[in-house]
Image 1 (cartoon, helix red, strand yellow):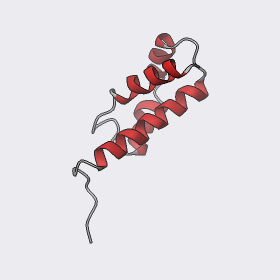
Image 2: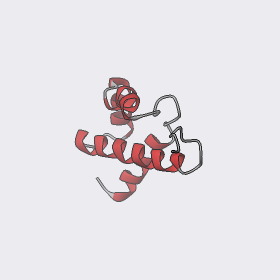
Image 3: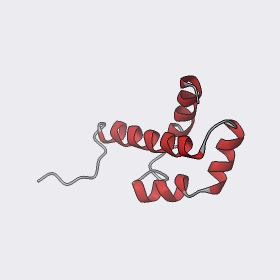
Image 4: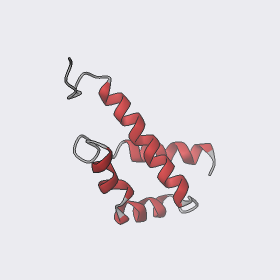
Length: 80
């Protein structure tokens, strides 16, 4: 997979994330990693991609999304 495709894939997944489907890793896993519909849709859009690459891109998008949203002060962590 070339960097341009990787970048497009990453952005595509990233913009699909929201506070409902990516609230935490478990929710994200259910909605993305274990979601056949998403895999099929992405396989259609990115026919050359390997499942391992797809999974890695999903995790990267989730990590980035989590960081971006933790930084903007809407986190629900208790401050001791």
